[in-house]
Amino acid sequence: MPLAIYALALAAFAIGSAEFVISGILPPLAADLAVSIPTAGLLVTAYAVGVAIGGPILSVITARYPPKPILIGVMLLFTLSQVLCALAPDYNMLLIARLLSASVHGLFFGAGGVFVANLVPGEKRGAAFSLFVSGITIANLLGLPGGSAIGFHFGWRATFLAVAVIGVIGVLALTFMLPAAKAEDPQQASFRAQFRELRHQQVYLSYITIAFVMVGALAFGTFQVPILLNITHVSDTIVPFYLLLGGVGSILGIFLGGRGTDWKPMPALITVLLLQALLYFTMIFAMHDLVWMTVNLFASSIVGYAFSTPLQSRVLSAAHAAPNLASALVSTAFNIGIAGGAFIGATLLNADVSYADLPAVGVVSALCAAATASLSYWLERRETARTALAH
Image (cartoon, rainbow, N blue to C red; front, side, top):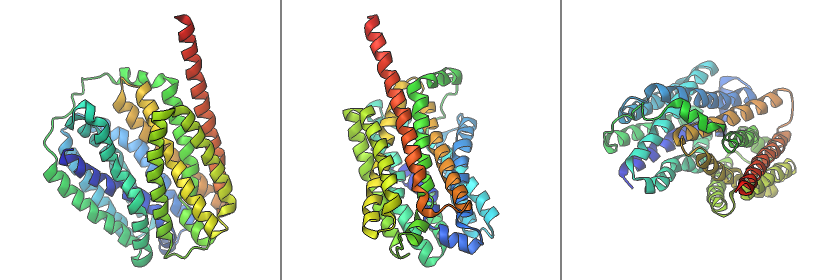
C-alpha cells in the first residue's frame, strides 16, 4: 500500500480519538466545569450533529479544490480545536471547540475517501479503504482507554492536549507523505442522478437501521464510565482496562461482521441485531455484578460492531452508481443515531432515570433495527421472486 494511506490512517486515528475520548472523561470533566454528567454527555450529541451536518456541507463546498491542501488544512484546524478544548474556560467554549472539531471530522473522511479511491487501482480499493478506516478502529481500541487513563491521572484537559499532539504528527505525515493530486471534476456526475440512487429501499432502510443501532449504543456508551463507577463499582484505575476490553471486542465484531457478509449478509445481520437486544437486556442485571458485567460488556462490544459491514456493503451494492454520496450518508446515519442516543440518555438521566436503566434504550432500539432490517430483507426477497416469475 502507498505510504500516503498510512498517513491518512494516522490522521484518522487522531480524529477518531477526539470523537470517542469524551465518553471516557465525563466524570472529571463534568466536575471541573460544574455541570451534571448528563449535560456533559450532550457534548457527544453536539459533536455527532456537527459531523452529520457540517461534514457533507463542507465536502460539497471544497469538492473542486485539490485534496492534499484540504486534508492538511483540515488537520491543522482539528489540532487547533483540540487545543481550544484543552483551554476552554467553561462548558460553552468547550462546546464551540467540539463543534469546530466535528465539522472538520466529516470533511476529513469525505476528502480522505476520495483521495484513497484515486490513489490505488480499483481492485485494491477495498483493502485501501479498510486500511484508511482502521485508524477509527484503533482509536476505539487504544484512544478511548488511553484518553480515559490520561484524564483520570492528569486531568481531562491533558487528554485533549495528547490528542492535539497526535494531530500535529498527523499534519506532518500528510505534508510529507501525500502526493499532490488534482481536484475531482465537479462535472463528472450529476448530484441529482446520484441522489436518485438513494431511492432503493436497500439504501434508505439500511440508513434507518444504522441510526436505530447507534441510538441504543450511545444511550449506554456515552455514560458507560459513570455506570462502571457508580453501578458496577469499578475502581477508576481499572476503568481504562474495561474500555480496552470493549475495543478488543469491537475488532472481533468487525471481523465477524465481514465473515457474516461473505456468508449470508441479511440473515447474519438480523441475528446480530437480535443478539444486541438480548445483551442489552441481560446488561440491566449484569451491571450489578463485576464478573457478569465484564463478560456482558465484552460480548456486547462484539455484536455492537458486527452489524456495520453487512449494512455498508448492502448500501454500496444497491447504490453502485453513486458510491461516494451513499458512503458519505452512511456516516451521516451513524452520527444521527449517535446524536439521538446521547441526547436520549442525557434526557432520561435528567428526568431522574437511573444509570442502571439506560440499557433498556438499547433493547428497544435494537429490536427496531432488527424489524427494519427484516422488512428490507422481505421486500428484497419479494422483488426477487417477482422478477423470477416475470421471466
